[in-house]
Length: 290
Image (cartoon, rainbow, N blue to C red):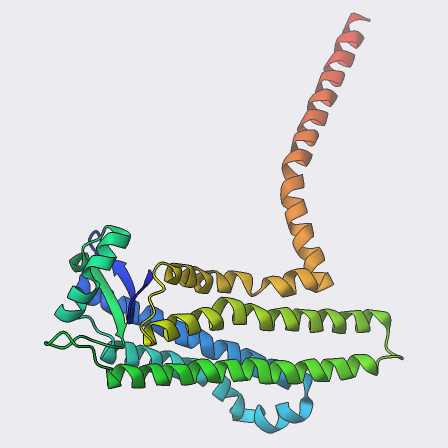
């Protein structure tokens, strides 16, 4: 779960009935957050590779030979970097327990001692009750902002360049068959949708989650909605290709049609078999009487 409160937000889990204790649960959350950083790099790498598939010059210069392995390395690097930041700078302690105790109990009817969490607290409270900016937390979030913005840059920069290249190709396809031209248009439409989806479901929600606590604006349970959009993204991302590209769409529809048609077909075959058996039985009886 993700929850925002005043100048902090937490990613937490209730470990009360779990096989993992509080510290082990913290490690699991760190790994989970590292996977988010991993996925950010995947978005950028995906669009870089896609542009390389469209433009041979770029592919030969930047993705040829062993250079292609950089694309595989970057998600691992981002995921590891994100996890290290979470582990070193966002660990819970007694002061953060006190800070989040009431809001977690009021919102989830859960004692803070039964939860493990990472906490990004931008403005802790000192012994005199005064708040101050935590430089280490701001620096860590700055690193995460770099990863987010670099991913956004790759998605939109290489997505736009793909768009321009495909548009140019479509304008020069007078002599190309209608099938090829239609496929290029479908790929173009899928590209546009796949650029918009992470913007709505990933980048904007995480920007909201990082920005509002930074300026001590409480967004409360809206943070739960942010967690849901991030969770559903992997399931939604393949859909544009599946429903926009004609061959994929026909295969998907044929698959589901076969599933829903099979029980009826089996029932009809069984009914026909029964009718044939009854008919044969009646014929045999009539022959016996004769």
